Amino acid sequence: MLTIIFVMLAEVLIFVPSIARFRADFMLERLKQAQIAALTQLATADMIMPELEKELLANAEVFNVVLRRDEVRQLVLSSPLPQEIYESYDLRMAGPWELIRDAARVLVDPENRIVRVIGNPVQDAGILIEITMETKPLRDAMVDYGLRILLLSALISVVTAFLLFLAVQRLLVVPIRRVVQHMQAYAESPEDARRVIEPTADVEELRAAEEALQSMQTQLTGALRQKERLAQLGSAVAKISHDLRNILTTAQLFADRIESSVDPVVARAAPKLVGSISRAVSLCEATLAFGKAEEPPPQLRRLNFGKLVEEVVEGEGLGAEGNVTCLIDVPPGLMIRGDEEQLYRVLANLVRNARQAIDAKGQPGTIEISAGEDEAEWWIRVGDTGPGLPARAREHLFSAFQGGARKGGTGLGLAIASELARGHGGRLDLARSDDEGTEFVIHLPKETAGAEL
Image (tube, rainbow, N blue to C red):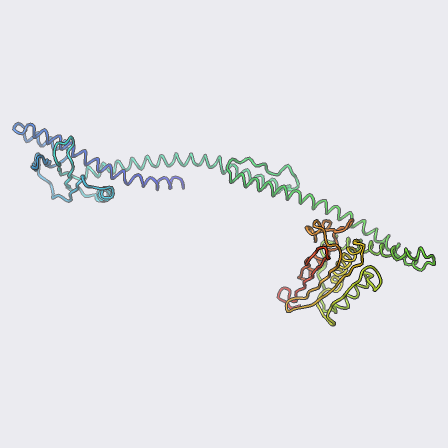
């Protein structure tokens, strides 16, 4: 329907000048017939009868014929006019817009008028020829011609619309329907790689859309497969970690007794054994905690942050002696609001990672814990003088099983810390990581969901 409408609108640009041209040709034809009748009269001026003159005018469909030859204007044929001349048209000087305007006036005026038409004789048979004629035959012929033009235009429009419909159906609708069917089939089983679309469209834009859809489906299928494997792995790891934690806890009890051994070799090895078992227990507990569907919402209350930091340092075994020195720069009496247990886990994970990074470097190092506040938030910095994070670890820093920085690491510590920080409405950011060390910053807002903390 749109095609038919548009074609008909375009036909207006053809119809208007063509109907004006038809009117001019109609008048020129009357001038030609009148010229023939006038020349007949001039050739037999003494022999023509009134009845023949009347017949000549009737055949030419005019009332009077005036022929101007040799500067002499001569009324060659004449008959009584049924009414006064309504208007005169000079076809010798009429431009396109005048022809269109006069044609429109004839079409909209149903009255039968008498008009004078002036033109040039054919074959140089004079200077000008002038006739008087009725407008009704002219208007009837114009209406008939216009209807035929409109009918032809409508036929062309229908044929064009049908051909365009077939073209659009073949080039656009069928490929789009195919894409929709592929999307529906893929949605039923996105893990099935056989349902990923294969680009076949000939239209460039549709081809680009199919290629983009193929890329998206391929990535999504891979991600779903990886997610499924990680879910299975997480379930298995959680089961193993649960049983392993129980075993290690028993081993830890016996290791504590070994520390009191009188054997100097055993006494020197006992602290390392206890430390290794403690780290293994902590890893099992972190794995079990991360394997839960979601962390419980934080129980917010005001707490002394300096005291919390001291507990974390003591729990991680960072005393005065050892390869790692811990510096604490926390304002006395700094009170923050948060979940004490969850913030302990965040700091413990960051401190543990920092200590392991320094131990991996094989040289003495320092861990610095600082904190402060402004009008909008509390901030906590945990930095170390370790070797810095490798590029691979920085790409997936807070992703479980992908962001491990050391050999054998799982990346669970940072993933858990980041999740717990988000649970407080804050975030965990990597401030820097280079050859001089690594620094993380925890941001805890003082307002969450419009409520002041």
